[in-house]
Image (cartoon, rainbow, N blue to C red):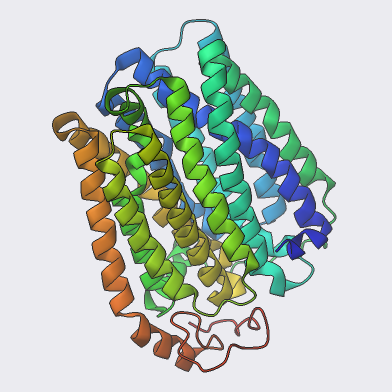
Length: 431
């Protein structure tokens, strides 16, 4: 399950990013709690969530084109440096007692801009950290384990620190945590970068990537399902302070525990995916996980007891992680190398970019109907989308198998699994 850690560069990244992500989750929880403490408004929670992700949606396609043309290592290295400055600004304003909601919105916009360039570049850079491309699915699963393991630790630490010291210390510790990933990136030993002169301008490169993804039988449905789930279901997280206080009668520690339960479930899902030896049947897992995620959200919306909410959120975290990571693996398996950055930018738009619209919608609905009704509606939408995706799996698997070297990747219609853990890369230009 940890075979990709034998690669030195990925091992450096894994541990450096692990430290950094704990700080990132601490800051995310602290920002939500700070906004709710200052205003008590679901609309403001949704607005800050929108501000933190809208620029990710806007700039991710541009970042994808750049990732296919420039040195990905250098692009990835810029992100934690800029993120350190953003976290320090939050810490200074909060510890100085002068923080206001408009400050948070502006800094959330800055954070979204940084993530918009960092996420698609980092996702497409993973393959360059590995000496053996066949370990890519395992590396993606371990990276998901890392993200969600930190989701368990970060919110719990944030809840305790907010209770004892306030939100400012969380922001300061996050700024310091970026030093670990900066060190890891600088310590890597990579092959000399070979520039790839662009065949067309930026706009044409973006159009080429969009048409490639839209016409691909294996890429298009995965991205569409991800868009719907991210728009309707994932924004439940921005409403968590309302559940902690108004539904469960708790405080900041309760909020941290709830988000920590999501992390526990996500870790279990990541362990399952890391233990898989092949990419066969990942499409089926994507559909099942999306449906389970929606069902879990619907059940959670009815709970007003902490002892019931925690296992339901663990279920939600497990299903969400399995869908996101499996989608990532399918996309990175079937994509042509010269379009990897652009396809991963569309993955970022689907996963992170739809979040701001969902956050704004969730905040508006919760203000009128309450957080439980909002989460219930999102869960039902996710289940409906999963059923439509599942209904098309057999047709998709036959189409993909007929047009590329990936038999069984969607629905596993073949009698036997392929011997190789990861099929060989397709020829450039193949869609």
